[in-house]
Amino acid sequence: MPAPQCSSCHAARAALRRPRSGQALCGACFCTAFEAEVLHTVQAGRLLPPGAVVAVGASGGKDSTVLAHVLRELAPRLGVSLRLVAVDEGIGGYRDAALAAVRRQAALWDLPLTVVAYADLFGGWTMDAVARSTAGSGRSRACCTFCGVLRRRALEEGARLVGATHIVTGHNADDMAETVLMNFLRGDAGRLARGGGLGSRGEGGALPRCRPLQLASQKEVVLYAHFRRLDYFSEECVYAPEAFRGHARHLLKLLEAARPSAALDLVHSAERLALAPAARPPPPGACSRCGALASRALCQACALLDGLQRGRPRLAIGKGRDADGPPGPPPPPPPPPPPPPPRDPGSAPGPAAAGECGAACEGRCAQASL
Amino acid sequence: MAAPLSVEVEFGGGAELLFDGVKKHQVTLPGQEEPWDIRSLLVWIKKNLLKERPELFIQGDSVRPGILVLVNDADWELLGELDYQLQDQDSILFISTLHGG
Image 1 (spheres, rainbow over the protein chains, first blue to last red):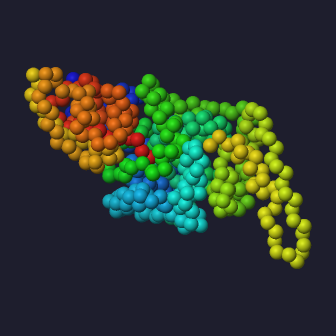
Image 2: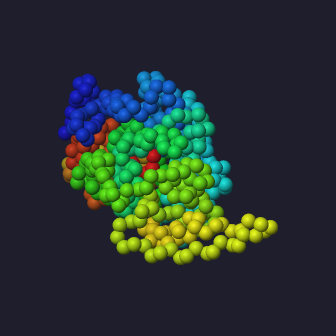
């Protein structure tokens, strides 16, 4: 059957049908509609006020490429300026090629680019080193959990370096839906509670973040990149095949075959969740080491790095902000902490004091479902 | 009896890795009794072009979920998906969306 006419310009043949409205559009009209929707998302949510200096998390991949391209189109209308920030996790055979794509984009679009590396920020801990340190778990890749936390921190650092007032990332509706599923599957009440909404205001001194593509389906992001002839990097991270997210992604794809709006529906459900009182996370404080937002003594990044340094990488991998304890049978009591060394004014400082997260976390992590 | 067809088959978004990294393939489909459609094209691709791991491209008699199909730059949904009958000089593009962004 021949393709219908574009219902917007009535001049060209339609190239696709929008999933929600069923409207048939040609490539050019679709791209215009896509950009208008992102503009609306940003303006209606007051996500990027005039004068904002916006750090765009740029990985070279399809989502951040589309994000940067669309925001560049919209920047004059929004009155904002853009800086590309790319994170080099130190993954051999993958990240270098992706960074090459970002550099091409920066040159093509005449946008400033800053690259921040794990090796510099985290005392030599590249993702490859973390993977070696966490290998042998026998279950889903633990290193991806580290990467998620450390990449957020690295992006924050990069954004500060370039004087940004806001951070944007390219997460699309499918990504958000996968995250919702992952949090449910892992019983992560803390993350479920924090997951909804278009962005975080930025507590504890963190820069406000948002995801302008959050309501765009992954398919439409790829089609936009196709019709705008955007050059992006499309290989999978070498560690991705073993990441837990793959299970959520597979499940979502099966669901979408039966119900095409599954991704958006999941995101909307998560936004409307109210947690039972016992499950609500405690109000966060500040990390005792770096001052960032934290619900335990150390923030996640510091706790993970601490664990790596001490050769106990699973230290901080737990169920997110569930300091009140998960529902169900209570955990066994943690082993009693060793008595502190006797204080001798003349001696060198002793080992870490008892009660530091090491002893307490051991009990919790023994049941972590990772 | 359908005449031989000359079509261009293209792979993008990482799908090309399953085809020796080659993105564009000029293909001549032999004349046969039944008209060529996307369904039979997929069978032909699996037999003649796919170099490795067919399960990453094909699922059942269709493409794996997450692989977009454009015929002459139009979403195959508009054209009948697997039932679309190929015409001479058609361009069929398979784009994988299955990787991080």
